[in-house]
Image (cartoon, rainbow, N blue to C red):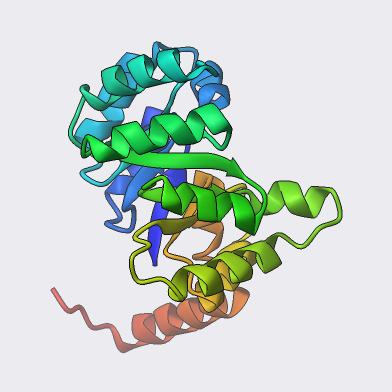
Length: 218
C-alpha cells in the first residue's frame, strides 16, 4: 500500500518526506486556499520534494477549461497528477488527458458505478471519499470493498483505488485489509499511526535497564 499526504503545507511535507514513508501528495482547492499561496508555486515545490505523484486539481467545471487547466498543471512537472471531478465533463477531460499520457486522479467518488466510469476513462487514480460517506450514515469502507472487488475482475483496469477523506488510523487499517492501493491522509493521521502506549512503556523499560549496565554502544 502507498501512503500519500493530503496537504499543501510545505513544512509538513518536508518533515514527513524525510521518514521515507511518503509516496505521494494530494492537494485540492480547499487545501491550496488554506495555504494562502499560489497554486502553481505550491505544486512545483511539492513535486520537487516528492518524486511520486502529486495531485493538483483543476478549478474549472466545464470540459474545455478543465482540459486547458489540466494541461497547464501537467506541464509543471512530470509527476503531476491532474485532479478532475467525477462529473461528465470531468470524465471527458480525464479520457483526453489520459490518452495524452498524463496521470489523472478522478476525485469526489461516492459510488461503485462512478469508480467504474473513472476506470473506463483511463484514470490513474479514483478517489472515493470514505469519511464524507460515514458523515451521512453510509459505510465508506463498504464502498472501498465494492470497488476493489470490481476492479479485480477486470485486468484491463489499471486504475488505483485511492482512499480519501481519511479521518483516523482505523480507516488506513481497514483500507489495507480490503486491498486498496493508496491511502491519502492528513499529516496528523500518519503521525498517529506510530503511537501505542505499550511501545512507549516498553521503550522506557529498555532505556532504564540499559542505563543500569553503564555501557555505551558508541
